[in-house]
Image (cartoon, rainbow, N blue to C red; front, top):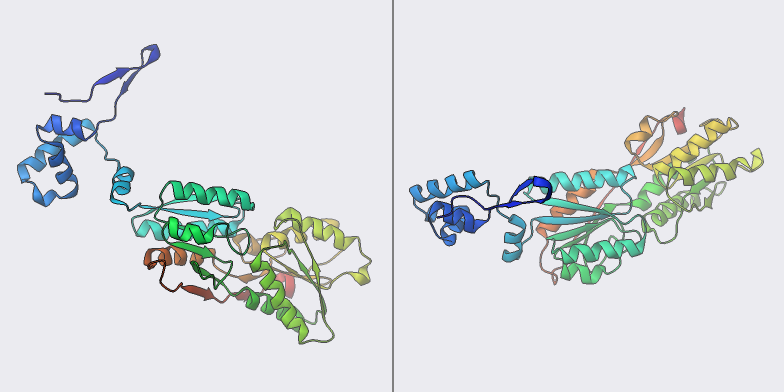
Length: 350
């Protein structure tokens, strides 16, 4: 009777012990593989003495069962796939944190992937998760809707959008009311007496940003003496904000905006850095500045940044809840929309 797994010798004299399997445990305990399986999965069906003998063999051999393989056989994975546009953005890191904490409470694990703001990579990550047979997918899409959402929602179990289209008929979604957020940002600046507003950061195809701009336009439409100009950026990053600020500084002082709404806090921080370094514009005296997302860095900026607050962790945890509660594909989809809030700091009210 074999009492331990055989030892295989590697090159250069090192010794590698083969990982024990259920057959090794059964041989060591003098029972069948089926009995070992019962001890692991239905211990109440095995006598106490047999359970003790099998557990002793498991401990001696260091056997660890392959839970992933077992779940695949059962047709139920314990893993959720999460795709975000960019983990370097603290907001999406918060989404991942919220999703991971909620999944952990449910006994699940998270596989996190970044699309790097590229639709082609987003599609590749979705395909990988489908191949791995994850239990479900949570995605913050690059555009308004991820590539292959309709097929993914049926091929990979529950499929939840974070942001994007709040009324997508093919899958559940959770997000914030970005139009409301854009409106309260502009209203805040208008109440401060600012009239030459500039919206910075409008990459094509990002519905959340388009909604924020639309909300700003709603507020300005109520004030005939106010305007809202738009300046597109190639990226929603600090560097994108710095480039936008450089363009503003190249203008004559009288043609510059007196207030800026940035599409996210990273863009706002880039604008702030460039303006302060140039030492030509005082924030908020000459130009008031408000960001979006209220990431942790906003409050600790050289001039603390006003922002529209939305919780990435709340989105991540809610998305996992919706995935776990998801009904059949034929059931009506759920769409949860939260309202963001205004956080006023020195960049607009210094």
